[in-house]
Image 1 (cartoon, helix red, strand yellow):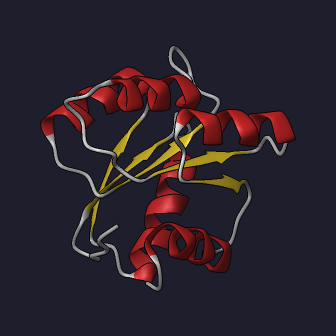
Image 2 (tube, rainbow, N blue to C red):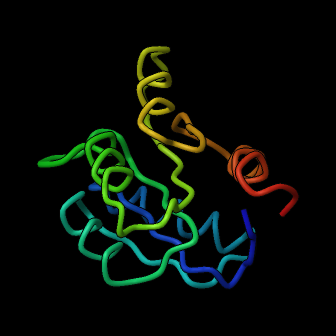
Length: 128
């Protein structure tokens, strides 16, 4: 997968503080173009109208979970295979497996540090 700090990144979380934290961490890593959405339906519309190089989504949201969002994205043949990282407070093995099976490229457990985010993105893209 091609990596570029100028790529557009979408952060999806219904908790505004978490959006600010993730945005700040991404900016510390060098990402400049960070958009955000507060729910799955809004994110899906944004994904259909903008070109994203990375999606970071919370799992626990309503009315559409992060897993449902990922399933919708992967099932839509008009959307590219955008790298998708699931972000959640749930460390259950079955959730990690479900996210992987749905097409997630990686999985981050909250709370996490800049080093953890960098390591997870390095796994997805290669060296940042």
